[in-house]
Image (tube, rainbow, N blue to C red; front, top):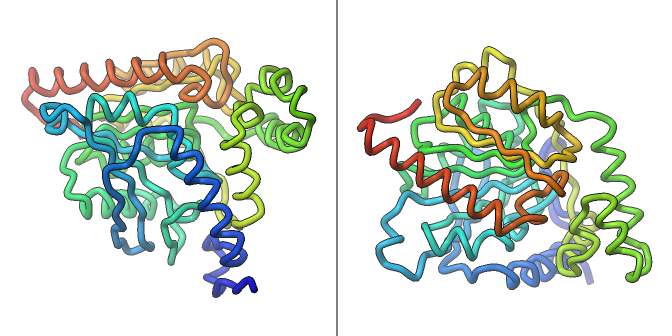
Length: 314
């Protein structure tokens, strides 16, 4: 018999019951199996709940001493979404993939973190709890907002921030929510039609069975209680000194690529922008090999600049 999970406060995400939660975890594990094998898992206590973390260690001993990568997934997902990226990234550097409290994953949320100052505090406490003094932060979608917010509010531990089609630069419009709605219905289409629908919608969920299963299980198991984050203002962006890399899908549904390609470097000196053709909201999934290489090259450049300047950004 299914046991109900005690209700948290109204503005904290929750699982509906234990049975659906365990089904969701099983779907996540099937997706994790497509990526690198985690070296370890641990839970980090913070003021906002327990953060569950997956660590991936390079096989090359020399690479284990390099500045690590910290991955922040998108809303409504968990760190299993990084399956196309963990093999390449963890071959070059240590990788830590975080399950964000407030999203379906193995973290346990006790207090909301959607306010910018709280989100920055949560991430700062998590990085401190992991003993990480210097990291390359990578965020996708909502995770991109978290990374951008950290670069603005708590940049002290950041060697760089890479934002993959992120929130935080423009207000989320109707076209994104329409895409979500249409994608949901397309996921129930006959298998033979899904590749064509996936290409039309830029929606890899439709053609990766494990990803599709995780998304469906998440929708049934978890209730997110979080408003969409507000974009940072021009003045807030202009305060950022962390080396920043913005990667946008050419058919992005939350950003206007050319507008941001002009705006971000103008406001954040030294920042880079890459517009990736043939993708929308998931460049790191649709073009994993290319985006993995771009991210690692950027991190290498940021590390090299740090050595040459001998100072810390932020």
